[in-house]
Structure formats: structure tokens, C-alpha cells
Length: 145
Length: 111
Image 1: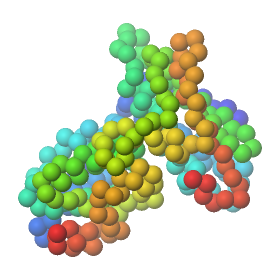
Image 2: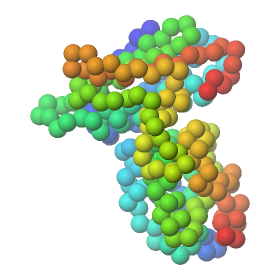
Image 3: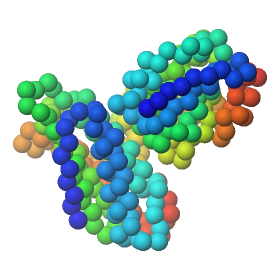
């Protein structure tokens, strides 16, 4: 199953993006196991999409045309992948180095994504950034974080 | 997001309602606490349904400012999703955390 959503690259839409991710993750868990939802699994998508969408908005350059961000959700029997795409300049999304002990006020976003997701990848194709985040769903576990 | 503030037994209790993300976190950073400089601070998160790294950063900023003044910030009533963000980042170590506002206010007032 693939679900796509196009939103303006505008921080006012960040909650809409994260709520969409939450609801799609909930539908996914309902589809594969009607008796056991997984709050942590769904929250991982809600939070990771909030972080990736924010990151995308912050990297956007002023443009006369309306910039957009595309959320694409793709599921199979045991995992869900969300891809966040935009046409902004390229950026790095490797595993972040964060000095947690100093309690910085910024820089937790990528750290959270990498902690919450099983696989995070970045690709630059034809002028488009694609950040893909995949999480496995373990049907025998109530909490797979 | 709605922010309100009241004074309870010389403790400033700040209540936040709604979502704290990149859209709303700047409001929290800019919020001028009327009595926060002089009194201990408790932040009641019982009505916060979701918090991301932007919200976390705003709360860290408040805590650091308060620490610079020689005080602490106490958090109360996190839901599971909010608590998870604090646990993954280990930012919970920066705060005193209680499950209810009454206990948070009582203990914050003793410090």
C-alpha cells in the first residue's frame, strides 16, 4: 500500500504532517494485527515525520514558486517506510554527533530519527532530496523501540 | 498552544496546553514569565499531547536560563509520548520530574 501527501513547505503544516504519519501508522498496525496496536511504533512515525518535515522547511530557499514537501508512505507485511521529499538544496543527514551531556538547545531532531527508526537513508536524485525512514513491526512484541 | 502562569505557595506553575513543535516552540521561548526569576518553576505538561525536538529545545532553554540563576525547573504530568522524547535524549537528567503537579509544587518549593 502506498499513500502520498503533498504539503506546502511551511512550518504551519508540520502538525498536519505528523498527525498524518500517526494515523497512517495506526492504520498499518490495525491492518496487520487488529488486536494489538502499538503506541510506540505509531509515535515513532509521528515524531520522525515532525522532525524531517521541520528539517525540510528550514532548508528551503526563498522562491517565487510555492515550495512543497511530499510525504510518501509505503507498507508491506512487516514494515512501514515514509519518504520525505523536497526540492531544496542538498543537505547531510548522516548519523548526527550530539553531545547530550552538554544539553544543547538544538540538534536533537536527527538524533531522534536515528534512534526511533530501524533504517534512515538520504538520496539526492534529479534535484530532489529524499529522506527515507523505515521501521519494522514485530508482531510478537508490544513495544519494539 | 496556550501558556498560562500562576503562583502557588511561592512556586510559579506554568501550564502548557497543546502541541510543542517547530511552529509553536518559538512562542514558548519568547514567553515572558512574570515571576519566574524569583521563584521555583514547575511546568505542568498534562495537557501537552505531543512534543518534538523543537519543544524539547525550548524547555532546555528555560531550564538552562533558570540554572544560570541558581534554580531548577520541575516538570510534571508528562504523557508517555512526551516522556519518551526526554528518555531517548536523556534530557530528563536536566529536570526534576513528577507525575503530578501537587507533588512537583511541594518539592520545588522546598528547594
